[in-house]
Image (cartoon, rainbow, N blue to C red):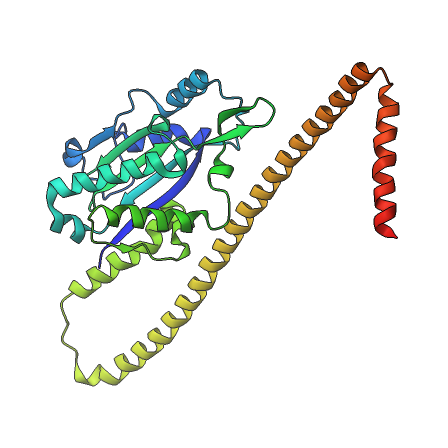
Length: 321
């Protein structure tokens, strides 16, 4: 069974150089032993980045005059890794594989009204065991600004991923988009693996590779005299393995809950800051309105405020009767 797989990671300024070197294959050596450098020539770009990711972001900020304050904690880039299993790509062939990745690229450009301009790089890697696509983009949002009366575009990772079900919605939308265009795939499993970092994800999924290697090991002849001892050891190991799996599952679940709570907390902080800004703006707007009315009808501003306050006070008193 093959799945439509899409996973996201967020990156701060300090991580961009390493991400650029890995995706664009600028390194001489790689810690990932799965990379076959002789096959790297087969990698190709759907959208090529002709500069570093940091410079590409700076160019976009300058071009669109983004009013954003970049700190060490700002997530400037997001990266989708899009793939399936090796069997799927072997079955569909090279041309359909290219169409799959191009379709995935179109999905990202359209998702949440992002826009192709804000995709920094889209690189297909064919030099690892399973083909996959790295799409690096600036998480911008387009929204109406009350103060200016215009639509604004700004870098806002927390708003792009607003809501605790944001990753689930991504999975649902990607699955729908890709299958409607003719790819016979199952929806990615609805577990929390998609929240893990790339390194943690590799650690979890590497279990399948280890299991596969163990299954290939030749069966050894066993001395009958040692059979009972081996059976007893095997039963003990099975019980121990069962306990390890239980505690590993609990540990992973705890990590996921902590990460989810951190994300929700950050979203609430951002929403709270936004409400404070809007509240201050409305206060200034109302005060300025009082000032203009005062000029128009030649009545002191304080008198107008008192009249309106008295009006609302009478309404509340009547409602309380």
